[in-house]
Length: 326
Image: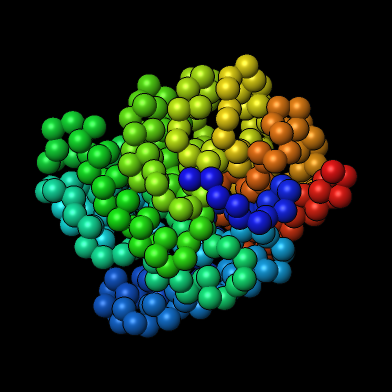
């Protein structure tokens, strides 16, 4: 549901995660060894969240995130809080990165709100809108071992049902913007209709501005069908490929707003405001000004806090200069 958010032209935001402070990484390790309590860990997660909000205030973003201090892997976080799951031993994702993959062993069930506490905690610290952040039903399905349902379609619908309840909890808490991440779709464009069904089941009828984030895949196959995704905004990675994605989108209908990734998060080099401005001018040859939101390519958890701050500041400066020209 498209709602008026009263934001400036070219709103600036970030995608979701911030890098975990060392004290939080150490505390989480101690928690899993039963060396500190859940209450102790929660206090440190809230401390990190407050620091993330302060950083976003400092650089001047228009739409905030809570920073996901309480989350590890984006699929396992939800699986650990839903009924019907067991968690695998660590499996390799890419390079030297490993994660514990969810195993669906029974009917998926909603137990209690999973992200509401940190949304509410973050929103109380700022007058800027804070996004609600969910991992989408298609990605949850694709990144889990299914040992219960008869088809991929059944799994997507089961996930969508519980994620809809989570979205409703966020709406009750005052959330106006919800981002439903679907990174798995970037390499499975043949199932875009299924992903679209899942997104619709989660977001249809909500009084929230809806976003889906997709990154790092074969967009030449996704572009012809991207109009099928039933959200207000599609957030895409552009900077990491020096905006070649824009050429892949040309000639295809794109009725949604676009989250324009202008900050490459997979390098230690900051994307300077001059380069960001160049990207934005290029994007304006394809998108209308009122369609464009500005953000990094992906979450910032692979960067340091100082790198994140510097990259976001350059992005905000470029957006401000472009607003003054319009």
